[in-house]
Length: 500
Image (cartoon, rainbow, N blue to C red; front, side, top):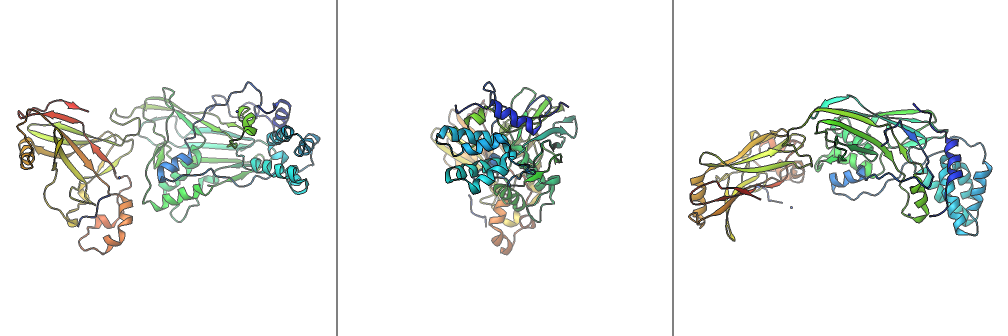
């Protein structure tokens, strides 16, 4: 492993080369290929590496629909205070210079010094005149908010080769190579501190992936970035506590000089938030930390210079067997197909998600039932034929009709003889003798744990509610309105051609 730059080298490099200022509800029914480097790059020719912020804040927006503000870690403390070197003292003095350009330059230089400058900055904030003291406090806050200062990061997988559906762990090892304490946004051993349900593996995994994903960039065998897939956690109290804890700031651990911390993100390709490895070939995972500098021209030179940017050692994973073609690479959960059988019309559902889904095939009017129907269109007129026309009540709701569908699997949702469909349409006034008309199927389910939670008082008191509705429903219920492609038909009962 190449020798890492010491904190003193980084400080010297920063001071020497830093440039000046320059950039839809129903009612209830009844990184870097080299070894990891810690760098403060300050040359004018350095280009900022693009990094889309697809980590915990965006994941939490998708999981909860909440807008999440940037969070601030616990204050970083300097471990050493062996006096103030002359250069640091000079820049401290310049915080009160008459020219604002010199004051701004001094702030940038002190930021580049990092934790080494904290003792002098704190002293200045307590003793200097108002202008200098105010600027010293601001620089102190910026430095304390930095993560991974002087930390070497190494990524690795628990296995080098997997099939697309096999779980794999991602290991993150962090070692503080500097002479000062460094903050890292993880709890020791991946410990979750969100509440009494923290022992749940799914909940623990969710916390770990949210903590790590801010700094990970995953690319597929074609070099395209892989998005973090996130599921809705509404009604999952333990998972919601984990997300709330991250909104409030998340875990932070201080690494003493020379100290290491290893984190294991269990089954990084499974769970509520995950990276899906679906194609055959090599996936690359890079680590990149970029300080969240304020959107102020004062910090543009720091962004350009990649000040306190940290890149980790890349990890590679080979997928030997790809997911079935029916599994969506873009994150689509399911498809509904309308097909013509031997005198029948058939609606089939295909699970296109990378994880199994639970499908509600209890059909009726109003929740907790789902709806599946045939929709015939004659010009501007539409006629609806339900898949189940018999009246139903809550006692008819069956656990056997909650169906688990594996990725790529197809199940039959509804079937109707063509002659029965035509009779039903004609009974509503549809001209089934017309030269041509179109037909499609649609499916809607809104039943999940969140609905259970909202209706718990009614479900617990109402007579005839089946046990399946009193107990927690499966986690991954398909909550969607699916519409099949439209099929051209005619009075001759030819199936015609599907059309968008």
